[in-house]
Figure 1 (cartoon, rainbow, N blue to C red):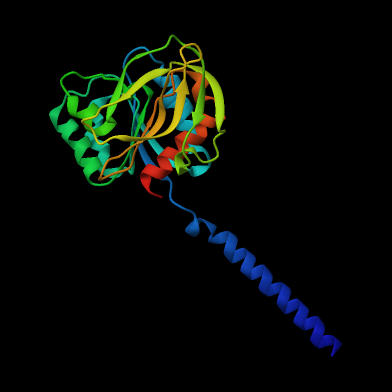
Figure 2: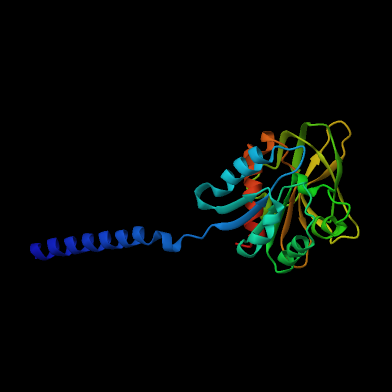
Amino acid sequence: MKKYLIRRSFMIRLLLLVILAYGVGNAGAYAKAPIRVLMVGGGASHDFNTWYKDADVATLEKDGFAEVTYTDDVSQILDHLSTVDVLLLTNNQPINDPATREAIFDFVKAGKGLVLAHAALWYNWADWPEYNQTLVSGGSRGHDPYGAFTVSIVKKHPVVKGVDKTFELKDELYYQKVDAAGPGVTVLAEAKNKESGDSFPSVFIVNNADARIVGIALGHDGEAHNLDNYKIMLKNAVKWTANK
């Protein structure tokens, strides 16, 4: 009996070791593939390389969350759109090529994710009104001088999950306004000017019928990009728009 118990105990331990080794060896097979993101930067008045190419790419690629291709050459957009889950526009430089403009709209119509960050929410292109009307459902034509203001979460949503209900930062408070001719937006967070008391959409969902679109008005410099609340929202926005 004693030999039987010893043999049985040995076999159980051996089986546990085999199961453990198999699990470790195959862990990668069960890990989620990184979300494929094309981030487009470049333009005026912002340090796109420091805060988007470096800081935001690092935030998104941490722990294999995303695989990001960054470019400030808008002629490369067409080369990458077919291979990514999410298009993240941060740029205020022109996208003049008609084929690229059409491809962006086709990307959205196909149900792919779109995140519009800071400068990409501006009324940048007078000759492309469809961008602001349809994809942004509005935009900004002005902002407060760079300084401190308060952001408040006003609606529960996966994009703002884990974000402090109220937080303060230094940034450009965009005068984000909704175009009544567009699809409309669902405001998730508002930015409030301390002196005037006026509030503007700071993080929002564009009510597009085909795809998930998120707008994040924050992001002038490191005061936003290095903030944990911003990092959480950025990752949440990419995950939600990718529908993964």
